[in-house]
Length: 404
Image 1 (cartoon, rainbow, N blue to C red):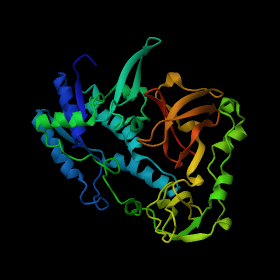
Image 2 (cartoon, rainbow, N blue to C red):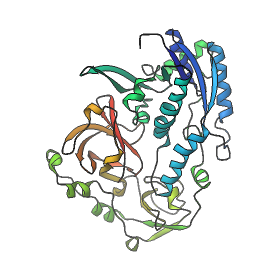
Image 3 (cartoon, one colour):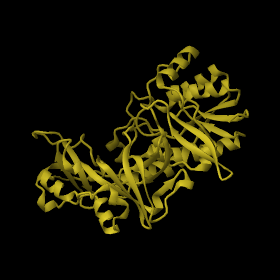
């Protein structure tokens, strides 16, 4: 972006967005700071974790220090409808949503972007650790979402649901910097956010006790925790054929390889009780409250219909690992629509299923019904509702919601 533009910066009250605003101002752009207020209920927020009032005050102080206009916009109603309602529905169905990914797609680069246009801005900017590049293909611009220069802070996964139109109006000013550089800039400028800890927890809500948050709408319901032994879990994991055959595998075998293991209550002894299967996710350790075991206990599967949790001992329990996953066709999203697979096509890429997880080699196999993803090494804690993102080099080119 060489031409000077009016840019709306989402000032969150943190150090990253503060420095992003300064960098844009130094580049000569007309910068306006906006604080998004998306959450009002503090009853489930842990008291010491920076409620929105403190963040709003810090954002205002940063704008004043930088000499830029400042506004507060309230998106709480649309946030409730698009993010919070979605979260409750997903947990109720026994799935594991990622509200941060959805928040970027639905709020920061949709509702906020529309508000920025009404304020006369051509772009919105955030403090995400990622980069955007513009190339040209067949005479039209192509916007690339690249990992941040700081591998430890890379946030491209959180933006894996953006599209070309959204990226065309998005700026990530600190994507070329490392975290220590960002803090040093803030210190030199004397910004109030220079030493502020990074925010944690749910997007715009903060750090919460998730069961308390979910119990606003989902009632506690006592159920059984059942033990799935290693032999049962090992038998349920299908064996992968040689990698050179993956692209040619028949659909029934692909479905078997990418389906989660099935446990039967009659074969699994009772370990204890829980207060609702919808409060737990695959791979979870905390909250099971079962003592007297030789090794830590982990959730292997949940059945919200029967209100059952299947668990196993040890981080190396085979039930924690899967060879593949499936994404329904309607949930497959391509940032680079010029690279999307057609049914019958396959490609080897790097994949992750959660933020900060190391990228893993995998093959994406497209069929009419959706996409099958087979991993070179079994992956831990795959849960329906999560986002799987795929990369070509350091570019995130697409993503999808895991169905199974």
